[in-house]
Length: 108
Length: 118
Image 1 (cartoon, rainbow over the protein chains, first blue to last red):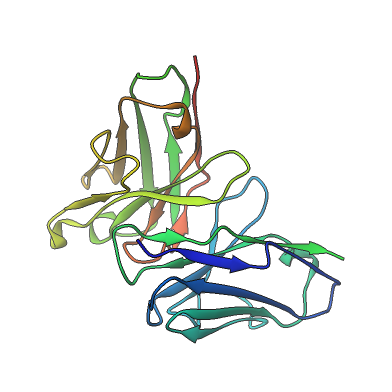
Image 2 (tube, rainbow over the protein chains, first blue to last red):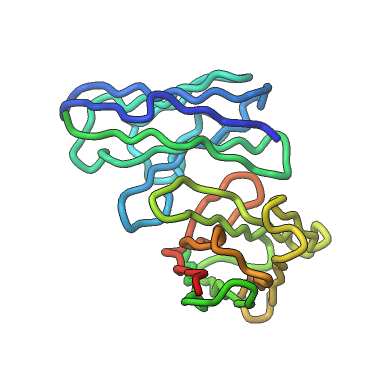
């Protein structure tokens, strides 16, 4: 099973600033990596697939990069609606499909 | 617009069974794999299982934690997927989401809460 590790657990950022979230896989997942955003009481929403492809309707301030075992989700200028928990998920080696433990982006 | 609506959650005693349903609309249901993902209270996301489309044999995969206890099925004529859960344990408590997709999960429903407690 591939273990996904996200860092940091919590990221405190001021509105308008840039946020950088990291995700590391225990072995290579190529670019078979997705990112999700989840707000309290809501389901996860797909942001990025294939490590860097934004999903339909996702603003350009969200960008993904990386391959192999190291991945990054960047939010260029945080808006109030971006404060949430973010998860990475690999789909290279399955089953199981595995998620990271999440990074909470909170208001500084 | 893609819509997924889960139902069937509730309070159930350990060792008992429960069946969840996922009713879909807004896309050609039979063409897609359907997954179940759960979230324990205050915790992260955990993939539970998946059923592929008939084009891919309609086969299923399960997480080790539920294999042998949970069964996923689908009725393409009704655009509904099911998660049959048996021998439930307290650690199965959480919100269960159905999701479209067999690699990543394009859309998720709002979820249904399952509480396993005596």
